[in-house]
Length: 399
Image 1 (tube, helix red, strand yellow):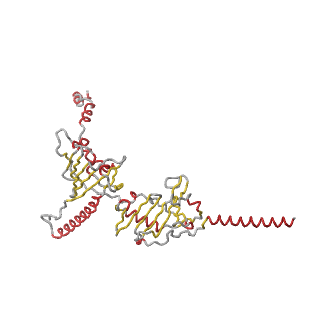
Image 2 (cartoon, rainbow, N blue to C red):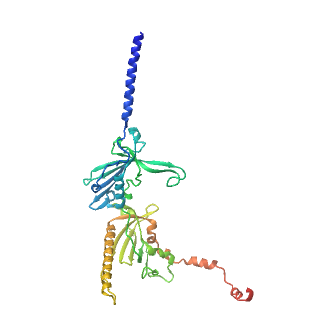
Image 3 (cartoon, rainbow, N blue to C red):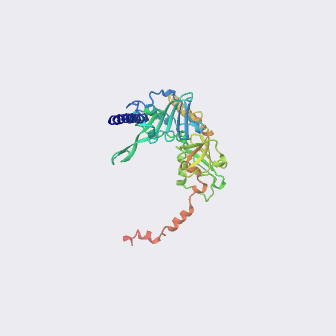
């Protein structure tokens, strides 16, 4: 009996031991030993000249930034020009990504690290055939905590890197030192933001659907005072109010682009229209729709110009001066013609601009005039002068 009991115990130990080994092996199989090394390039060596597109996907949000020739466009915005600087910097960062901390993880941890299709952001580099040749899953940002004197904001936690995974290979999960904060699958984040740049205007004409709000102002040069066209005797321009037109649309920025715009829905079937002429001969025609939300307006623009194409030489101009001045004139004309061509390209788009950028074009006629009621109130509030006061000031002792 004792020997039988001993044999049974030994058999049980073998079975349990084997089961334990299997459990341990299963647990180890759930984890993948990192195949990455500190300092290794996450995506290996990339031929940047072979990159013909970038695709970012997060859930149902997708953005494709594609190269055609030397130009980059955002497909989800009908190939509206992409911000080349942002795209090239992003691709360069991907190419330079290096492992700072290899990670040994199992499938169960991918959700926690946001390295799943549902939670992460998939970045794909596309070749000329439109197919991805490199892909990287971007997960949660790696946060660093510090004391009161640490960090860009003086304490708390801040992102100092990001969890990444090449394709779906668990062995490649690692932390990199670049957070890649701009890796957002939002088309509006990747479009080129530059819009037409209006040089000093000398004439502005605004036409509202309600004609009584319309007006036209002009000046002889960029330093001159504005005057109101067809002003009545009661209408006097307020210099402070019209001063905003001197720097009108000098550096506007595009927020977004409307594809296949519904003119009625955008208010562009009955828009506010603005005609702007500049000191350099540019002629801008803007069509402004109705306000979107609290901050933006849809806008359409057409651009033309009337340039002086020949330089008139001075009366006593020397030959050596003439050659230099002729060249300067031709160089300037070429730049202006290049600017005209670039700005005319906006003619086929409906863009969205921030309200504060175009507020001068939304001013109504009455808002530019001196408010006589305010002046009258100021006059009434001022203390009446006493004739004896001036006399007292010249008397000895002021009496």
